[in-house]
Length: 403
Length: 107
Ligand code: HEM
Ligand code: FES
Image (cartoon, rainbow over all chains, first blue to last red; front, side, top):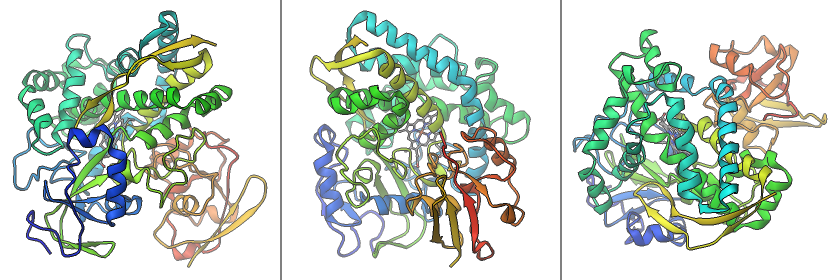
């Protein structure tokens, strides 16, 4: 068993892969396979952390939050040893029993009942966006659709002021880069973060949030005594951090899949009610959120491998989502696949609390496309955007035709 | 091991051995009962794990929470007196023989 951070337990395969390098991000799938096939648990020499890439182990770690905790950070940095770069999240980076209280507040603010109220306006905005893109014919599916659509619905649903919204995507990109190791992506992001952090801190305050929005509803839970007045802005911050860039990459992933796999596009067109599942399958297939860490709270065994207390474990959600032990034809995008059990939103107590918002946005966009568009064609090179946690494109030039 | 009986919409019936501590939803999804979607993984957020509990069993279950009650208002198939969310039913040895009927749709 290792003294934390120096060497792995005997028998754990050493990997010289850097899972946070640009080279890795260019094409992670072959490397994911290497990690999965090396063993149930691997060790990264470069960052001195354990990793799990198979579905069973990722699922097991996610579902034992007392042994594999989040309160020491869900990035590489161990909050027990290093000060967090921002005040710690009171939901994402919290453990039971405290987690349940803040989680209950966000579950309620983002509940199915609330989604029913939002549905009409989210669907109308998606249809209007698709009409406008049809008029254009050729456009960038990332800037003009994957980013433009969430930006047209989510900040309003949250109740944000119109001014300063240009900070939202840079702030989210910063948050997701910060989970990685101290590489260039993380350092550059933190260096440039001051204005975005100031914006976000300001927007989380009650007086800046429009009545009826998610933000105001969170503050109302403080009046009800479910959380303290000081906790409310921190929960609003969670939505500002995790609610936008994730769906941007989710919608981008879905459009990229449908543009690349015409047979799946044809199936969706013949039955637009598959839209929700087509989005869910894109979340499995591309895994917009690729990784998260946990920290061990005690000596523990994973699939027979002993791991000491205080070790960081990197969970490869994306690799688990294509583990052939769990999935038939894992590398195929199939809009009719039974996707339940994928870990693209995590699993267990931290499983994405915004999943209903994500699915509503994804379904609205894909169903509008399926009803109004006959063909999507990629017309130029798809370029990648690099982030320590998020996977997605920088640009995807396409042209579309009306049905 | 408690056995759970799932009656499908087409009247086929499945008997599945379950472990105490699991939820009825977990038993269904890990045993190929496709009528249970369970989009939210048991986090009481999606109402896609709806079941009708056999009349003889309904009173023997732990009462539902306020959240479950609210979620049941949003189920896709008709909500009946005996509607429950299967992710909120924890299996205990006393539930050996529990019978649930699966609705024809969840979304
Ligand atoms: C396709 C889009 C999305 C993906 C792939 C995604 C992915 C994830 C994942 C993997 C986790 C688990 C983190 C962990 O286990 O440590 C998570 C948690 C979370 N997500 Fe999402 N997410 C998405 C959209 C959203 C949206 C739209 C919101 C807000 C409206 C949101 C808010 C959150 C929050 C607050 C948490 C923390 C929950 C907790 O710790 O209990 N996410 N998300
Ligand atoms: S699985 Fe989502 S409410 Fe039961």
